[in-house]
Each structure stands twice: as structure tokens, then as C-alpha cells.
Length: 302
Image (cartoon, rainbow, N blue to C red; front, side, top):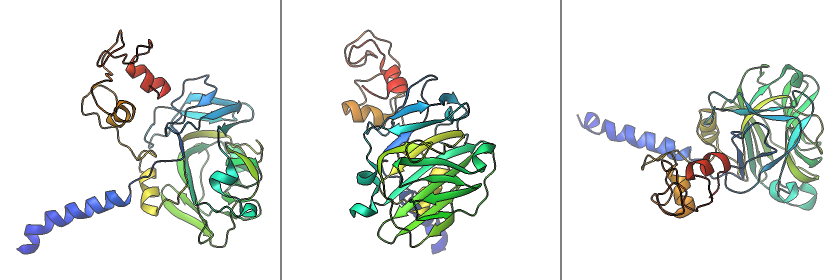
């Protein structure tokens, strides 16, 4: 009788604990690839202004990961040539570690991928940096977690032209690198040294733009912490890498977190308004000619 009485409470507590354990911290950067076709940058939706500059062949407005948090569109990398992103303002040794400089950094790097068949032949790297160091992706058809001479391969096979969620983690304190596929642990190296080298962080290539990944990518996210297995599983289940939800209490088409971040209330910005501004609730709060909704959808700025 007592068990029956308190069972709902126990279940509610268990769910709350699970959600709490999977809370996603704010990322170092996040590319949702909802950028317009023809864009020359991938907008950093984390709010940290680490946009990705396009080098070569990258096409936005392509198919997005259907099980991701932003399935509307993704980006095609190197399907008509060679292309990669350079993360503006990034410095790999400072931000993600350098063993030769004694800089140890924990990290997590994740994304959705739909690799082209050509990425399973030779080297095809999803993440890298300007010189040596980090180069994560594929080698000889296997997933590959690499710190330039401190490398290991994954074991779970991926298929061309199929979406998969992939996560690379590194814990500098215990020298452990790990690969997760679709939210599940795949492989590890427990004596992996940190990366070396220098330069900016790259997406879609390694070592200054070489050995490009070919295929679709969506929802690239990076953290300067090692996410735990519950958090990684949550990402693969479609939780936003921002750790935010899209709650919209005032039903104006603008997420509450966005309004509170910019103006600290839900009244000044109005996604249902069309202007003219400036003024609270007009739909063009700052009077710059762009509606509040356009600024959210197109520029993610104020």
C-alpha cells in the first residue's frame, strides 16, 4: 500500500534525475547549418561569435539530419571539390590543448554526418586544425580519433549515405580518448597524449585543409569539457547542443531564451509584429528595418 502510494513520486524523481544528468552545458561553438544557400560563413549559434569561414566547396541549404534538433537543413562538404570551414577566432593549442606546450584541455566534439562513399577510402577528416594536432574522421573506412601520432580507430561500422551521430571526447586528466556512435560508446584509448601542433580549428579537413571529408554534416558542436555518456546519448536523441529548449511562453515565434538574452524580458521583442519601429512590441525593436523575427531567423543577432 505504501509502495503504491509513493510510486508516482519515485518515478517522477527518477525522471527528474535522468533529465538533470543529461543537461547539456553551453558549447564553445555550435553550427546548426540553417544558413542560406550561398553563404560564405556558418553562423555560430552558441552566441560566442566563432563563425566558420568557408574555404572551397561547401553548400548550405542541403538535407539536414532528420533526428537532430534542427533537421530543416545541413551542409554538403567537398562533393564538388574540396571544402572546409575555418573557425574564426579559434586557436587550437589554447582552446583544445597542446602537449608540447603543457596545455591540457578536456573536450567534446560532435556532429551528425551522412558520409559519401568516397569518405570510406583513405583519409577523410571531419575535424582538424591548421597544423598537425587534432584530426578526427575516417581512415581506411573506420572512424578515427587522432592527436598526431596518438591515434586509434573505432570499431562500429558506418554506412555511406546514412545519417549517424558521432562524438569524439578527450579527458586530459586521465589521457583517455573515446568515440561514441549514435550515443553509444564505441571505442577508447586510455593512454592517449593530447594534441600537438597549432593553428585554427577546422571543420571538414585536417592539417591546413587536407584530406577533406566528403558528405553531409549537420549540428557541429564543441565543448571545452568532456561530456558524460548521458549527455552524449541526449545529443544523439535530438537534444539541442545549446542545452536550451525552444519554449515560447508569449507565443510570438521567438524562443524565450533568445528574448531574455538580448533584452531581459519577453515584451520588447515581438516576432508577430512587422514594424515600423523602433519601440517595444513593434516587431522592429531597434528600428533598423529588419523585423525581430527576421533578425532571429537570419542573423541570430539583435
